[in-house]
Image (cartoon, rainbow, N blue to C red; front, top):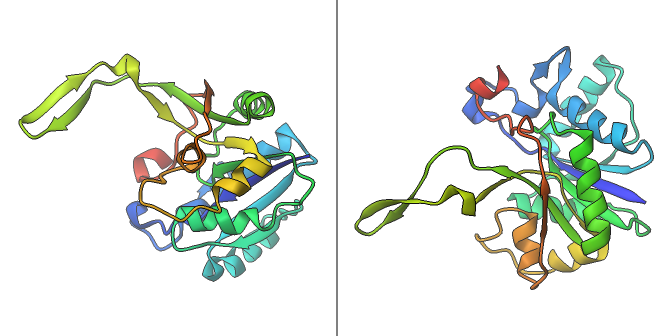
Length: 213
């Protein structure tokens, strides 16, 4: 059995509005609904755990009623940081789930093919994340100023990040540190290697008004 934890704790501050970005409409419905539907397209039977701040859960329920959106969802409370939100989501994952992914609620354009690659690779190796090539020049800040670094040695990381459920649960028993910037970094802290699979460039994280356009 597969599961996905969709983390949607954005406040929308960089959007310049009062509505959290995951609830903003694109193509006739809120962003978050598009994201959920993409995973149901991949696996209609998978467990979907939606992590939302407590003060947004009533609004989400109203949106679901307004848009007649009624897939089976398990709701978990958002935490202080993303790490704590994922940890809360993990407590809601069914015990018989073999593979669990974590995905940003504001990445509605992930392709089903990328989701499939992540789950397939996680089944083989235990941990898989989607990445894309860096297509702009990167500079490294140094005490003397800055320097160009070879971009072919770097990748941009996306979600979903998918893991064997037992591995992810073990990883999230660790104490939180500021170096845990995503789920892969939490798993790597255990000493487990993370496999890279090809992502899709359209799989952006909607953060600014320009992203929304």
